[in-house]
Image (cartoon, rainbow, N blue to C red):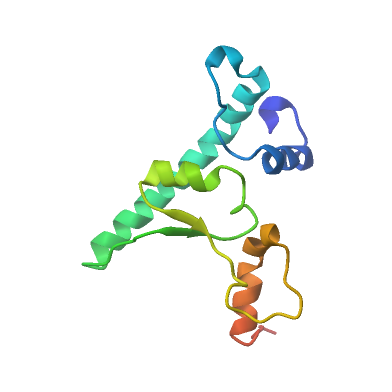
Length: 133
């Protein structure tokens, strides 16, 4: 987060710690850092939401009668605090986080907060783990 003069690692830690919610409270009660932080994370969130809007429009235009009823997020950033709520409000669609371990019998179950990051690995394992040489 160049706007705060932070290294990438520290910025990522802050995003994971504080999430991606707008600052709560009346403007006079919101700490200045929360305001600056929100102004830094809002543009990429909005770009992501716009891309999802375009995807929903494309799907409806090219697959007649098909309607996207909800959005499922996967990957390491899917569980960021506030992301589901932000996208749900912005898109007007229900938004959830995928749990790739749901319905699987596992010897050891990964912690809930790390499961969205396992979506690709789980998918590859379920299809046989085919690799390219």
